[in-house]
Length: 147
Image (cartoon, one colour):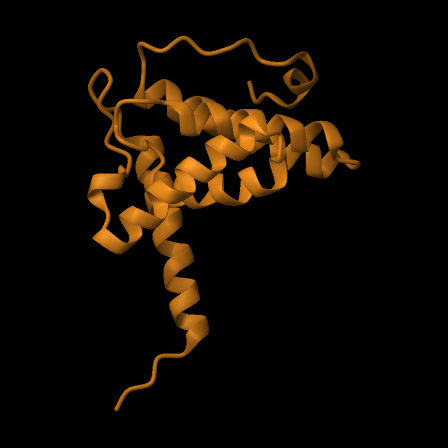
């Protein structure tokens, strides 16, 4: 009997998530229909979990419970960044959550890391939903924008 080390499984999970993130950034889908993972692409159990996390993070965002919202947003982003394939809310909400983290960060390095995620989410939304207008970049993030 072969025993799989948990750290190998964790590494596989991280690599899979990284692959999906790269996939989302390099594939330019047709208008309003992204190639990034959607709920329907997931096995039933993961689909239900991602959909539940979507509902929880959206509700917690409205309630201004940002810590819980962020935890559930990450689950959705990692598994179904394009939600149902028809809405860009995961990207837009992710930027809102990242901006809150940015504003409370105390080091320039942390701010730079958060800004990088913010701009990645912008790029992914622009590629997946080219017809959707993006909000203006907050002034405090402009110094971190790569040229």
